[in-house]
Length: 150
Image (cartoon, rainbow, N blue to C red; front, side, top):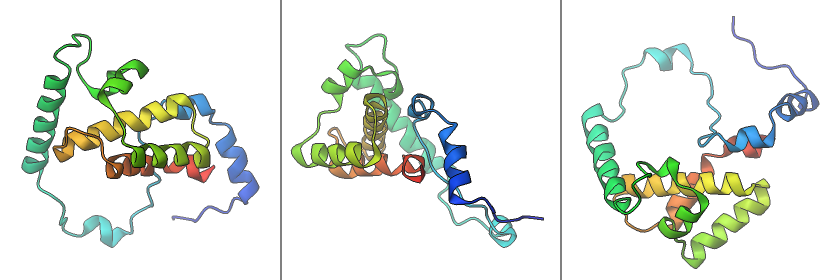
């Protein structure tokens, strides 16, 4: 039997407070997922086929490999350090404003901000874009939903 959470807002807050900020900063994608209804689980999927997704990921990985040719220690966006982000994740003014607003509203640390930039870089690669765009940064921020739940 499935039951809805009966915890008070205070109890939920106490639960989330047990997860330290530094621990949460190390999780790149933080997305709340709702339980599916039985009919949603058994329904025929209308999602994207695996082959086109695999091809898009391979193209993005090739793009990443080409970008990091001068950095022999880097093989994927997740390996970038802060100084790499300044080089490979340049932001225009609008994107910077969106990110700064998220930093203020979500109380993001430098590490959490770096994670957003790495995810945004990956989203841009999957989109086939050389430059980070505001939409990439905004989407990456959306993957920090647990920050907003606290």
